Length: 134
Image (cartoon, rainbow, N blue to C red; front, side):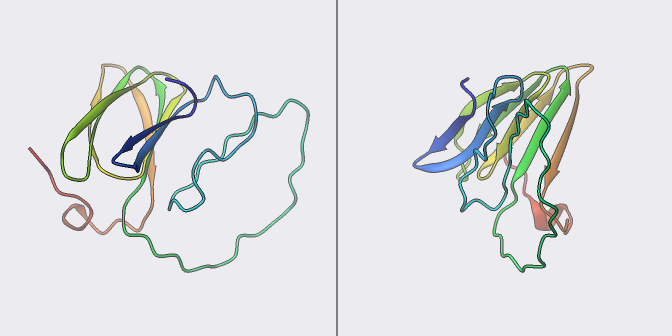
């Protein structure tokens, strides 16, 4: 996959694959209107970022976005549309990430895989957050 590689279904952005070893410049590859943002920085020479405080701001989101990052091993993410149609499988190795905005997924972690996931909160429990599909 190219970096960043975007996965679409019917003009809807499902997610973005990121290879953290292959980007050369700093950017935010996520569209501004998405409810979850990822920034990538590639710093050659020392840089000091302006001191700042993020304002308290009420935001409304209607979906849960997930950022999955593989530290070691291999992870397969089988992607599904919001109406449960299989789209494709994304394979993540060390230093690869996938940010999913829409749809669903099934994750297969191979033996000796370490990864982490970040998503918006608060967590309201499994019944409020997701449903299992066959």
